[in-house]
Length: 296
Image (cartoon, rainbow, N blue to C red; front, side, top):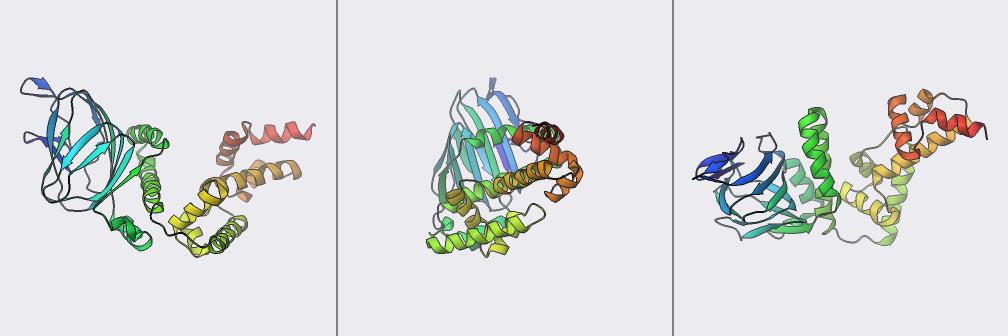
C-alpha cells in the first residue's frame, strides 16, 4: 500500500509535514508495518483539504474501519465510495492508483485490514453473499474505538501480542460482515448445534478455539458465534471463561486442592493466569476468596 501526495510518499514511511509552504497535517501518526497483508492504523488531523494518490502492488480484498473522519475515494474502474465515521467498508482494491479526497480540519482514526487468501476463502465458503456487490458497508460497534486505542498501544509496546490482537480484530470484523448475510437456520437445527457445542465445552479440560468447537458441533465459526450471541447473549469465549471460573470458585470452596491444582483443572496453564482471571471476575484473589468463605 503506497500513499503519496504530489509524488512524495506518506505511507509506508513518515509523511513530509509541509508542501508548498503549508502543513497538510497538524498531527500525524501511523503504524510502522509496510507489509501488504495485515492491519495498519492511521491517526491524524488535517490542516488543509488535499487529495492523496493511493496504489497497491496487487489487487486484494480489504476492510477499512473508519472510527473518525470522512473522505471520498475515486477508483479508475469501480464506483466512487466514501469513508464515514462509524462505518466499515469491504471491497477489492485496484492495482491502478486512485485518488482519496480529504477535507480540511478533520480528525481521522482509521484501521485498514488487508485480508489474506485464507480469510477470503473462509468468507467465500461460509458467507458467499458478501461478494455479490463490489462494495459492502456495515456499521461499527462502539467497542471498535477502544480496539483502535489498544491496537496503537500494543503495536508500540508489545510486538509479541500484536499478531494475536490483529487476528482477533480481523476475526471479529469478518464475523460482523458475514453475519448480515447468513441464511436463517431452522430453530431446531440451531438449538441442536448450540447444545452440541455447550456439551463439548463442559467436557473439555481446556479452552476450545472457535475453529475446534465449530468442527465438533458440525458448523462453521460464523454460525457458531451467531448462535451464541443470539441465543446465549454472550460470546463463545466469555461462556467458557465464566464457566471455568465458576468451576474454580466451587473447587476453592468444596475441596482442599491448592490454587495450582485448581488452575489446571479449570484449563489454565498456570496458577498466576487463573488468579488474575479470578481477580478480574470476582474482584478478589482465589486464596482470599477461599479463606474468607471458609470462616463464614
